[in-house]
Image 1 (cartoon, one colour):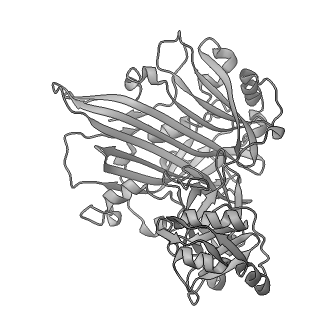
Image 2 (cartoon, rainbow, N blue to C red):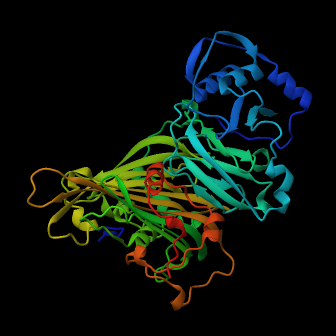
Image 3 (cartoon, helix red, strand yellow):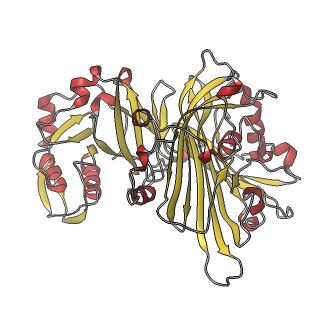
Amino acid sequence: MAKHIFPYGLCILLFCWLSCMATTVKAQEEVLNRVVYLPKSKGTVYVLLGMVSERTDFLFIYDSKVVDNERLVKIGKGSRTLRQAITEIVGTHDLELRVVGNHILINAPVGREHPTEQVADTLTHFVFEGTLLDKKNGTPIAYATVGIEGTSIGSVTNREGEFRLCLADSLARKSIVFSHVGYVAQKIDIPLLTVGQHFTLTLEPRIIPLQEVVIRVVNPVRLMREMLEKRMINYSQKPVYLTTFYREGILYKQKFRSLTEAVFKIYKAPVQSLYAREQVKLLKMSRITNGVEQDTLIAKMSGGIDACLQLDIINHLPDFLLADAHKDVYAYTSADVTIVGDRLVNVISFEQKKEVKEPLYCGELYIDSDNGALLQAQIRIHPHYMKQATAMVVQRQARRMKVVLQELIYTISYKPWNGVYYINHIRGDLHFKVKQKRRWLGSSSLHTWFEMVTCKIDTVGVTRFQRNERISTRTVFADTHFKYDSDFWEDFNVIPWEEQLIKVIEQLTSKIEKIEYE
């Protein structure tokens, strides 16, 4: 029968290419003095700016500290200049408006210094922050790839669509690229943005015209076979170092309990290496625990790091990728055609056959229609066998508590650099129901999660770590002893906390981020 994988225990308005050539002052004034007619409307600033964009074909980039997306605004019907329309909607009269190509940048009031233009060359690093939204409905785009063009440096957005990039000043003339499944990949030049602002950005959903798709019968098993055959071409055949950001957290009864973060250097063996395993070296670590509220449940996560390593399913082939060998276990269907970045991909769905009565994985695989590379995967335990799968992920339970798995979801993505694909982002979310035994009523929710994102790739001088440099990947990582380094964490590309975690952390009685563990 099929084997199990992933040991885990529990104890964005639209962006497009922006030219570096700034529009002349005269041309800018001509654009901003253009007359636009707007109907009588009421809505948020985000919605009304979107309406202006639809009528003028100019798109907006702005600092969310200057422009309040959620503020409700009423405007009367009539004609006004584009500058008047922006001012009326945003509600601030002393804004600096810059026209670059078909974009309008809404900056802070005139007179405020712009660090990027004045002191970028003297900075050792600079930080960009923002929120990525769906252009159509304004919802956050979670787990989107945010990277510096032409480099291996990058991060991903969190569940609220937020991102943060801390970059060396040598990258001040580069471009940032944003991409996600089903959206048009967009690029923006860093010199157009101002350091210290929190930008609101959008991606446009990609609708694929029929003429772009060759109508043919797609054999999903054949596609997966071709994907495996091209592994040696698409993925690294040399060992590499991955500098990664890792974190794991536990929420119980919708309340934050713990958050552990770390920066690892990972020795990654080549694809199809039979004997060389990954090695992990701990660089920095941070831990936050909620010691204010006491509870009868103590939950610890073990093997989260090892799960991230195993979830590199190109290096560690799970049974569902071996379609030819498991035709009797899994059913494969061609589900859709979509876009990942600028690549057209085939979506293959898989699930266990009805006669297979054990908890196995199901999900979707996103395979490049041109080069056959696996770009993303979303997998989960089959919902019909969730209770049976509890033993796969819960190592030990307290005598008076019953923990039952409710949902398990893994998200995996790969990103190309110099023509080779590397693991980019991995996240696992596990939801449980916790009930005290001998009590008929009442249960509580438990949510554990872990994720890892590749921030940098090094291919030169890669050797295995010394024994005393390596850490164990299968233990309770949160129990690791460390010393907190605040200077380091300020200068690293971390994934911003989800909103719910921020709210809870602010309620803690001590400044826990300054705690030093000896």
